[in-house]
Length: 126
Image (cartoon, rainbow, N blue to C red; front, side, top):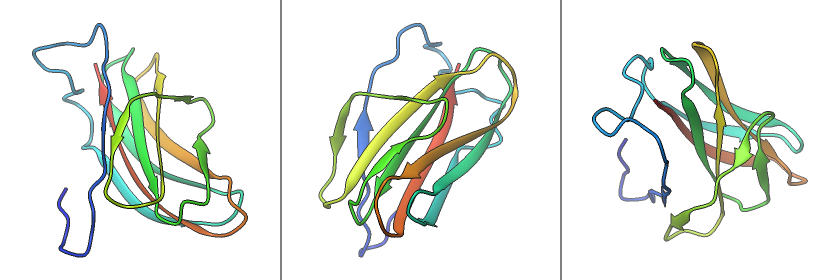
């Protein structure tokens, strides 16, 4: 992932206990996902990965450029951590433990009253 001179990258630091220290990311993931999505009020935006290990921790991060409001997707738990951003807006991280392999949708819901632009990334930790 890269950014142009007119874009700002947002980062979040968080810790995970019990993950593989030699190879933390699921090597079978069909690559991390990234999406820029315009989401209508009350709607959801998502990107998908495919994990190859049962019991992965699937996680996603979102930046809502307009800062109108974003909530976790269905089945996900909000993750606490420290966001680093030079741009105003809403940032949120979520996770869920999966018990099977296959396609995993990482989704966030627009809780604002107008269309919002979501920037979503996701991956899986084994």
